[in-house]
Image (cartoon, rainbow, N blue to C red):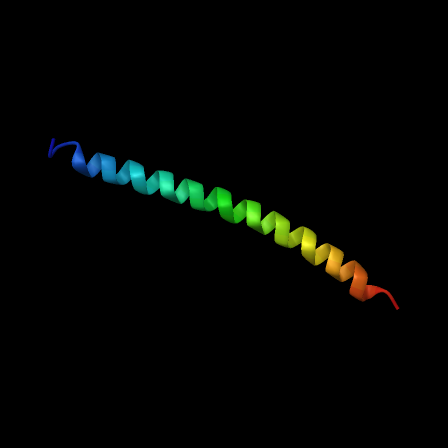
Length: 45
């Protein structure tokens, strides 16, 4: 069991980082769209 513990921890960490990256990317895309829309609204003379 003890031999598998570090591996499991590393895998879990990689998985969490993967989920975080995925989530950040998704939120980033949404924010990007919001910024474009807001920019289009505010850019009007």
